[in-house]
Amino acid sequence: MDRIAHRRPAFVALALAMALLLGLSAAPAPAAPRPAAPRGAAPSVAGVPILPVSELRRGMVGHGLTVVSGTEVRSFGVRILGVQPDGIAPGIDFILVELSGPLIDETGGVVAGMSGSPVYVGGRLVGAVAYGFFGGDFRVAGLTPAEPMLEILTYPSTLPAAREVRWPERVALAPELREAAVAAAGGEGEMRQLLIPLAVSGLGDRRLGLLRQGVRDAGLPFVVTSGARAAAPRRPERTAPLPPGSVYSAVLSYGDLTIGGIGTTTARLGRRSVAFGHPFFFSGPARMGLNGGSVLGVVRNILFPFKVANVGLPHGLLTQDRLAGVGGVAGRFPDLTPVTARLRNLDLGVTRGGATRIVREFEFLDSLAFFALLVELDRAFDRIGSGTSRLAWTITGTRRGGRRFRFHRENMFRSDFDIAIEALIEPAFLNLSAILHNPFEPVRITSMRLEGDVSQRDRTLEITRVRVSSSSHPEPVEFGVQARPGDVLTVTVTLRPPRGEAVEKTLRLQVPDFVARGTTLQLVVRGGRGAFSDFFFFEEPEAAPEAGSLDDLLAQLEGAERNNDLIAELQEPFVFEGGEGEVVPVADGVPPDGGFALAQAVRTLRQIVQGGFFVDVTVT
Image 1 (cartoon, rainbow, N blue to C red):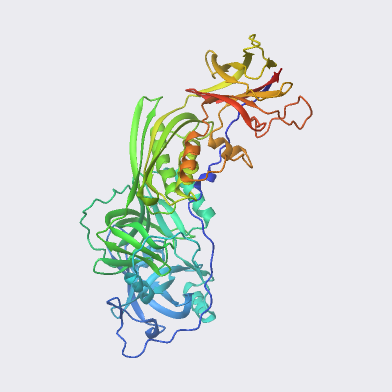
Image 2: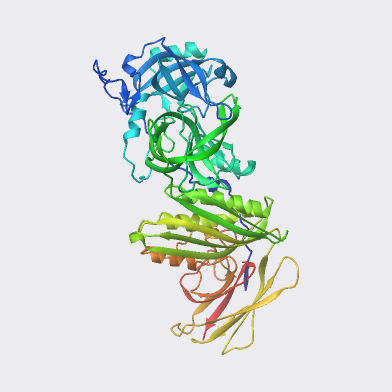
């Protein structure tokens, strides 16, 4: 009988920060200059008076509007330094400006969160602050012109398509504009899109660091900051207009985990508004929350100064996420998916519950669900570190034709490093993601609920002894057993907890009638391999049979082995690399599969099962 050491999970924290957000860079193609607007054309777009780019001249002065504390809209000075046709993208010019005034003295220049700050010359809208000259003095900035931004107000609202490309985040300045920028800034630099402050509630510094690392790895133009919790909008909800210069929040989730991108309102016309001057996720049509906000202050970081802000009261629905900015409508609100949890801390004897509501149409709902549940599990555990957790999760949704489905699964998890993170990989990534992004039919997730408990105690059992008997040879043996085709094998397994007395469990399985006499099979006794195990320990995990439909996928996910399963499996002979009779463990001690399982018996226990043994079964 050969013993397999139990597996010990390795902490791979940044594997989770994930997926939050993928994209490919795309640079704008060159285009011929566009002719100026004909004389006599009305200087307005969508009913908003503008100063067209064709009328801008170097040296013109005006003012901009933004918020740097609370909700007070304040003014700053602006001087036009030049215009670069098609500088942002074909059809979208770039306006170089220098900022000034007491507000700019306070902030040290343009800061993240000023995206969308409207700029006026002679009382007419020129455009919105959207870029900064990173290098030298932060007082040099770039504007997205008013014309393409205001055109967003006229776009139809439809459901979003998957994001496939990234937008140009840098503007290559023409020689004369670069010379003007360097002269005004007092040093070399590059013109880049302003970062978007991402206000996040519910996550401590360590978890925010995980999210920041994921944002950096994905190359997203966000600066992650702490923020306050915001309540989900209620229907009907009275909404106050967002005036130009006020805080404009594009919201992904509400509740315990509130996440909102912070920018500035550029213009509004009736119930519609436009902001940012650049994209948020560049999804095209969108369905995100639209809220106001308040600024706590400005952090004068030497790399990228930024506003720290809170998401404010609900205002409406963000319907557009375009190259020239984002736009929305007041009084309408996004569909939200509730992600709720009720968890008991067995060490403290307390139960805690909480909820987050995530924008249902958001492409990365599964990633946000992971962080939402992380908030709840961290709060219930009231610490970060090793532990054991028993969880049950239920996912509901609708599928093709509006038919409803329900998915339910339970499992146990053990971590020597961070139980909250390691316990949530399977519910959020390996289950929710698989369902949400399945290749068979479109689904919408209408709810996700997590229940269970968590403890610092090591609730594991290690297999220490296996004895086997057969109906034709009833004497239990440890090192090999003889059986006839059709015999029932009785497997007695001794399991030992970290502390306390060992326990015994019995499983029974039958030798198939078709097995030829003289064949030696392997009886594998082991703990269940949850999906988590394959996710971390196999470079090329053995895949489950491919699903042929959404129903097949749901059944496979629900029926997958659990970490607290005790399994006895009769397998075809192993092929050993080290020669006859030599066991070669693979994958950090996880027992290898010898091939097709001829018979299996499973008992689900209240502790995680670790380790494994092999016993030869000679068919006589």
